[in-house]
Length: 227
Image 1 (cartoon, rainbow, N blue to C red):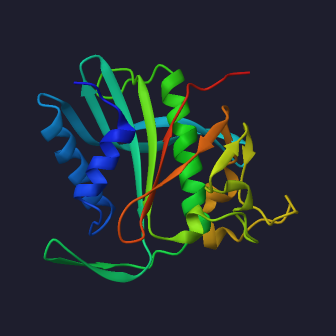
Image 2: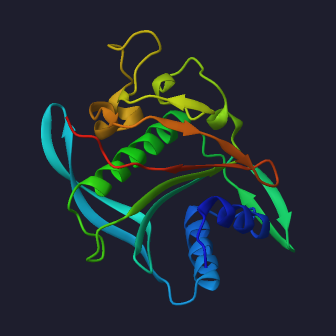
Image 3: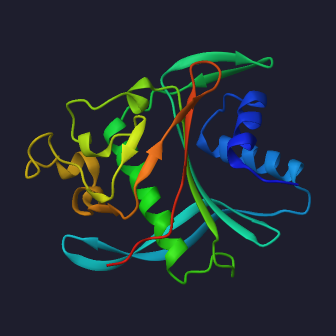
């Protein structure tokens, strides 16, 4: 059976357009995938260590992937994000009380950092579940229009998620127009404050519509370009 993630996600979100939380979405997608592709080997929360530059010092940081799927000869790593604005939704006789996550600055940073990590594992010899990944994706599902909206006056103006073409460059949290004005460490955490993200490929971001005001962004990572 042919596996195309764009087609798969369209079917998944048509059947299941809302979730209690991010863990629920990850679990539901894993079950959906397993029902479509019998005999698939699916692992959740797969951890490993990756070097990162923090305050000018290279150190190993422990990170994980939400899903690692092994199907035929494909080993697919997926990072998934589910961010909501507060509202209640009745779907399929179940009421979902969604939280107001806010923290758009941190969410934008985390999506770009996920993409950096996905590039990394496609290039480095870092086996997940004893297999080298052949594909890696970042998936964002949200009903927060500020995440797919255009550039605004905030600390993550270099980390936008709106539709468009994004070139390879360093990206970090700073005031718009002033790369030396940084957010407070207490508001973003030491790692986000000090780690500059370097995604080495250019990417086209394209959002797709779902139900109840939700939209999703799927990014397929490319192998990291060294040098």
